[in-house]
Image (cartoon, rainbow, N blue to C red):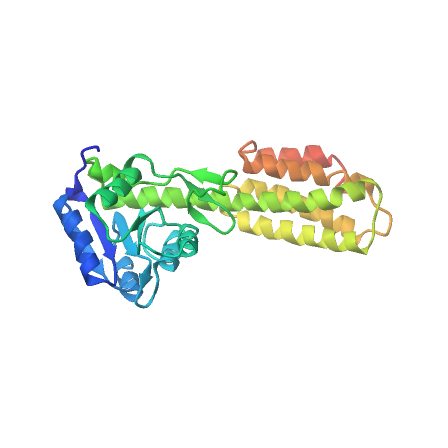
Length: 309
C-alpha cells in the first residue's frame, strides 16, 4: 500500500449511528487525518456542503431523515456542494439489499464499504480512489464514475484533488475552484453533444422517405419537430464553445421549415440538404468544425444557391 499523507486532507463523515461514526473517525485519525467533519443526517449534510468543500465524503446509505444515495445524486448534478467530482464512499450494513446498493451506484457513488468498517477495508477503498479511480462519464441522465453499462458513454478526466493531496501536493482554493470549473465545462460540452445525437435520430427518420419523394401528414409533423428542435438547439448553443455549430442547426431548421411549408410535392433539392447538414453538425460537435467562418462556408457549400430559391 502506497505511503499517503492525510495531513492536508478534509473528510466529511456522515452516519446516523454514533458508534459507527466514531469507529470510522478513529480509523481516519490513526491514519493522520485531523480535518474530519461529522454529521448524522441529510439536513446537516446540506448545511455543511453549502459552506465547506471536503476532499472525501464517506456516508451511510440509510440516514435518519433520508437516503444518502439521493444526496450523492444532487452532488453529482451540481445541485449541492461546490464539487460534483468529489470522491464518495458509501457505507452499508452487511446484509443491505443489493438492489438498494445498485440504485446508489447509479446515483454516482465511487465505492461501497460494508459495516462494521475495518481499517483494512476502508484503506483499500481509499487506495482505489488514489490509484484506480474510475473515469467519470456523462449520459443524458447520469454524471458520475463509470458503470458497467457505460461502455459507449462519453468519459472525462474528473479532478481528483483527494489523491493529489494524499500524495503531498498543496492545492490552493483558487486552483481547486478552477479545476472544477474546467471539468464542469467538459460536462456541459458532453451534454450539449446529445443535441447532435437527437438531431441525427430525427434526420435519419425523415430523410430517407423524403428522398424517395414520399410526403404525408406524419412526415409534415416530423419536419415541424426537426425545425423546432434544431432552432431550440441553436439557442442552447449560444455562448458555448459550440456556438458555431448553432449556425448549422439554424440552417437545418430553415430547410426543415421550408419542406414543412411546401405543397404536397417534395422539394428534392431541399430534401437532399437534410443529411449533409446533420452530418456537418456531428462533425462540428466532434471538433472538425472549429469556427463561425468554417460553419458559414459549409452552409454555403451545402446550400449553394438552394436556400435562397
